[in-house]
Length: 221
Figure (cartoon, rainbow, N blue to C red):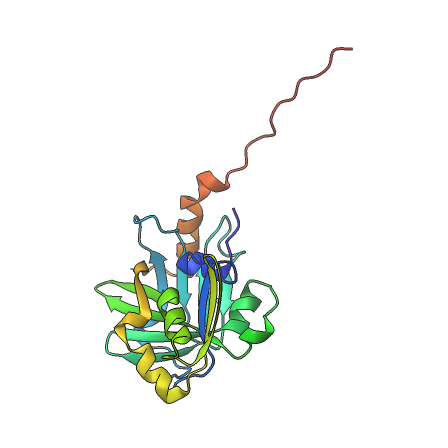
């Protein structure tokens, strides 16, 4: 079992294979410094049918994603993210160039200089991660309420928001911008990166175990 593509592991939606929403411009309030409350190791909360994966936000604000049969070897890292915090909510802007590079796949020309938006909400000793409501955003674009482009085929879709920084500010803090029905739950993991990787690897042992080759019958001479 290999760590699946970055966005698939993080939010159960395969980038480029299901639904994607990105923004072209960044709000002026988005900065390179990540909030101290986000830094450290996090693990997906057990239950709810979500994948077991780990997220580490380093002191340099790099976002490390761990999972798979060998979490440290398969670790994926997003760099140059931007953060915008209001109270317990932080909007995270992940550069698509970095997301694609982490998955070792080419960046599509139309996604250059775009960012994936994630809403991170602190909750007790954990956090809730939400992604945009892709269908609703597509409708807003089609109706002219949001400046952008949308392209859909069946359940596969892509939205690119072209709104300027001022308009984007209002849009991103609108509660309905994010889909709360497919949220991901994280809990703080205080033991650090290596211990997190070990815990993930142990939990995945049965799925990752490779048994001996099946016996084959030998023809009699």
